[in-house]
Length: 80
Image 1 (tube, rainbow, N blue to C red):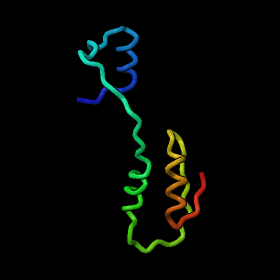
Image 2 (tube, one colour):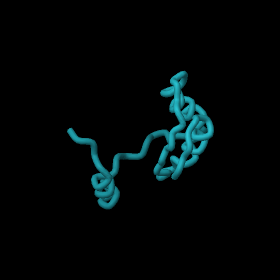
Image 3 (cartoon, helix red, strand yellow):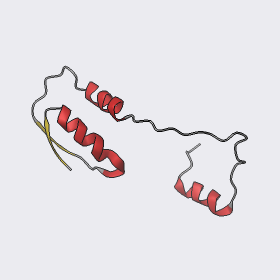
Image 4 (tube, helix red, strand yellow):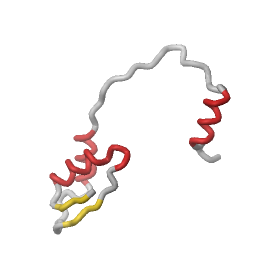
């Protein structure tokens, strides 16, 4: 069975055909995962001999912040 796409969710919202609200509301809290994510990305090349690279990045969807931190930690020249 395919995963519902955005159009499916839009139709549910437009028609009001939504599931019932949760009996107990959830909570939210801030969580900064950038350091762990950067560590994860760099783990792919940890210990590997790296030559100078030029990395081109599409910084859409908030990826620019992690990209710049990663570029400072790895031996590469970057462009976005």
